[in-house]
Amino acid sequence: MKSSSSASFLLCTVVFHLFSSTAAVENDSKPPIISKGDSKLSQSDGRKFCVSKPEASDAQLKKNLDWACKQGIDCSPVEPGAVCDDPASLRSRADFAMNTYYRTRGETKNACDFEGTGRLIDTNPSYGECTYL
Image (cartoon, rainbow, N blue to C red):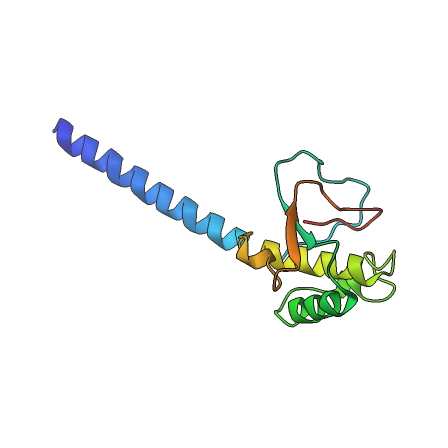
C-alpha cells in the first residue's frame, strides 16, 4: 500500500508542476503593460533590456522601429505625444520598441539581434513616466 501512496503523490506532484508550468508560459505570452506611475523597476533586478547599439544609424533605428511595431507589439507608448515620446528621438523610440519585442518573444538573444544593431544591457532604461518592461 505504501508504494501506491508514493505513486499517487508522485503523480500529483507531476500534474501540479505541469499545470504550474503551463500557467507561467501563458502569463509570459501576454503583452507588457505600461505603467505611468512614479514606481520604477530596480536598476539591479537582474533583468536584461534590449536597446540599440550606439553605432546604429538612424536608418537602422527606423527599420528596427518599423519592423518591431509590425510584429504585433504595442507601439502606442512611442507615438507622438504618448508617455514614451519624450524625448522625441528616433533612438529612444526604437529602443522602447526593440525592448518590447524582446520581452514578448521570450527574452532570447536572437530576439534582440535586429540584424546586429541590438544589444542587451543590465541597466533599466526607464525614464520619467516611461517604464521599460
